[in-house]
Amino acid sequence: MFREFLENYLHLCSYSDYLEPFVLICIIIALLTEIKFLKSNQSISSFFVYTCAAFILFFGTDISFTINYPVSNFFIEGFNILFALLEYIVFWFYFRRVLSHPFSKKVTTLPIGLLIASIIFYFYRGLSVGTTDVITKKLPDFIISFELLLLAIPCLVYYYKLLKNKPTNELSERPSFWIVTGLFLYSITIIPSFIIASDLLQINKVLHHAAFAVHYILLGLLFLGITRAVLCKKPLET
Image: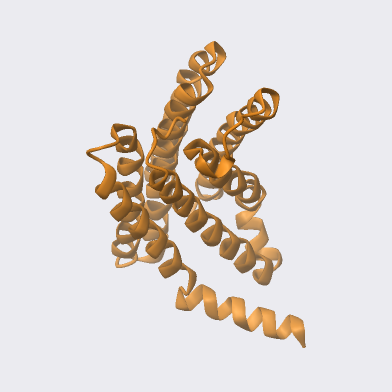
């Protein structure tokens, strides 16, 4: 009985897009907050670009659905991995300022190059081999998983540094804590889902819908974390 209820609920959520408005609301809240404090806090600018890109991504996805499914799905995944590249760049340059460690500055450029090469390969293979090709369809999940794994690592370094230095200020007053925590929870939870996303759809639709429900919730919480960080009215690197 519970399984049937859960399956019907998640099926309804998937096709009625109940959780997408939640993410969109979180993005709009973050966007309006960033606009309000943008002039007084220049460290917000990169996250403002990131939030704008997320906002545009939602509408770009809706436009892509007007094309036939295989092609629209190909371009939707293309938008997602391009967004993942921007996401990586924004957060890694943020960590370069927060961690202030020589290692964090040295390892930034190589992953960016790998992500760019992977994205080029995705579009090349999709346009030359076909949008329904198995490798083409699975590649975005691995690209996004790789990107999130790269972002989870500096989050762990941040927590290690936080515990080692034992800050005297309240964590709730540290903008970096809200941003890193939102990103870390999003990264470590979503990585397994993206790795097996296409296979999970074939094995169990309920679990697939549940995984994407968690994805939407944590993505929304990430933007709420950024909003809370901006409301601290301090440089976001603090």
